[in-house]
Amino acid sequence: MLHILYIIAITAEAMTAALSAGRRRMDWVGVCIIAWVTALGGGTLRNILLGHYPMTWVSHPEYLLITAGGALFAGLIASFMRRLRTLFLYLDALGLVVFTIIGCQVAEEMQLPAIIVMLSGVITGCAGGVLRDVLCNDIPLLFRKEIYASAAIVTGGIYLGLEALGLSSHWATIAAAVAGLLLRLLAIRYEWQMPKFVYEEEWE
Image (cartoon, rainbow, N blue to C red):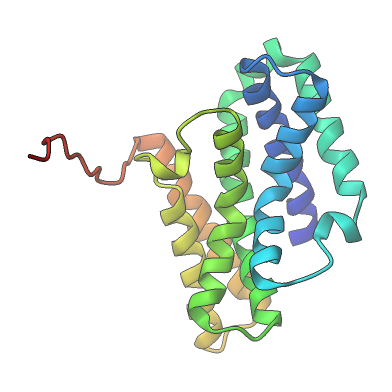
């Protein structure tokens, strides 16, 4: 089930990334690169930091074809996708929790400390979007007031907490995914925001 959700998530991420590339007037190669970075960049960065090889897209090169295909398709139906904005926000929320749990599981398999497991989940869930925004010259969503990284932290924390209480990985995954998804969707629905740090004073 998690694998199927992963495929759905990377496809949705690639399609929304294509629109970001289109707003920057990139060519089709650029569209595919932005799609790959967004959909697969979080896991790639995680694996580099943890020394976990081979990369997911090396073991499964079909992921490159799936995400590129999704991005190119999104480019062809770009005008129609605007009507599906809410759907893709929900799919992005799904991708966030799925990527986070997968990142936690990778670090667990490497028998790393709990704090590294949590960080692995957050990086997997959030880093692809950060890389996309940086390449598209936007302020990353992660660094703005959105409840995004917080949702990843909650997801990873619930997953690890339930496992520590003796719940199986299967049920911990389901419970964490539901809780993280609910938090993110409620944040979107009610426009919940993180506090902002504002400092405008000039140094003497």
